[in-house]
Amino acid sequence: MSEDIFITETTIDGADDGPLAGQTVAVKDNISTADVRTTCGSRMLEEYVPPYDATVVDRITEAGATIVGKANMDEFGMGTTTETSHFGPTDNPAAPGHVPGGSSGGSAAAVAASEADLALGSDTGGSIRCPAAFCGVVGIKPTYGLVSRYGLVAYANSLEQIGPLAATTEEAAALLDVIAGPDEYDGTTREDPNADCGSYAAAADGDVDGLTIGIPTELLEGADEAVVETFWDAIGTLEDQGATTHEVSLPSVEHAVEAYYVIAMSEASSNLARFDGVCYGHSGGYEGNWNESFSKARAEGFGPEVKRRILLGTYALSAGYHDKYYKKAQDARAWVKQDFDAALEEADVLASPTMPVTPFELGESLDDPLQMYLADANTVPVNLADLPAISAPAGETEGLPVGIQFVGPAFGERRLVRAASALE
Image (cartoon, rainbow, N blue to C red; front, side, top):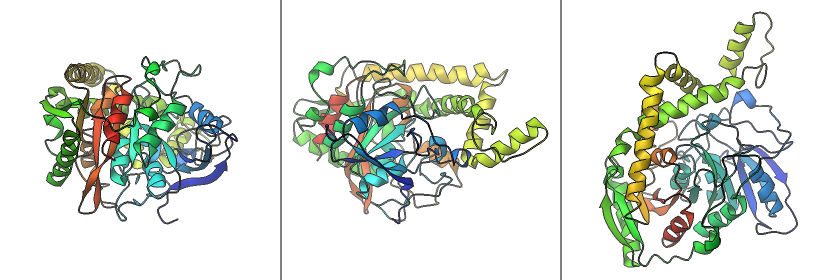
């Protein structure tokens, strides 16, 4: 295939029957699959073969799905374009010559190219919603704790969640039905308190009559004019079906990107310390001084974006700077959560463009990491607040996909599914 969607093509057969029988699934390559290598898009884990399945992998195969490949991704989930992968970039099937978004770009591209019916991604700051928007598919970032992270190679534990991607909202919700629920191997998982309200897939009925939608004005500022026009067209479609809208303000989101990257990079510097070529990862076969061997293995194994985030995270956690950076970032995170909770007391869901821009051309953003970080401005606040969100296709501008994001209260996934399905 020309899009370089998969790092490893494989076939892992599922059970003979179940709710996903006959469905094919692409799995992001940072989710463990027994006896099939799991690289995280990195040279550091190029030959790593896990001895166990992630809980989500167990659940989708027990539900009858067949796994068809491990999807390409930004190295260790660090990127917005899938261009930081050690195995090369993925082209966007919905907009050839452009990036598919990141870091679950291979997963979204697999669905957009019909290489798989469904896909699993992980979302640390928008890594499911961004590629869903750029590839014109549906992606769900679940409430923190709804889906087990057991078997997910950690980047930033307190922010990331595994979630589904699919061509339609109902299909994505059906995959969420299979993977959601408590797991004895992940102590952060919780039972959905709204479980008696029916399945997530059943909520894809398109009924938005009476739904109240809050529109955070701060998340429209700075977005491309064509993206904003497409967003308002989608909102108009929902209003025609009986939804009502009003403006809300989230003043804290002005500081969300800074807080997110301090927290994410700090957790990354800690999580990735284990990959030293001795305990885990690429060794290089060096001999002699241990410190020199350690440094050479990490210098060879990690790419530039991962090294940048490890260095910045280590700096933020270092003696004398913890209170100046990390503590302030955690304070900002609490402020963001308060803002979202207050806005959702007056609205069923919040809506914004998923990404403030259309897909970059391949290679366009690599020389300017700040541009790449700012592209996450509409998605990272949701991860800081531990809330669920969905990205659904809103339309196109100049032939490029535009996504609309809905954010709900904790365990409000059914509201999001209902709103997104009304646009199909």
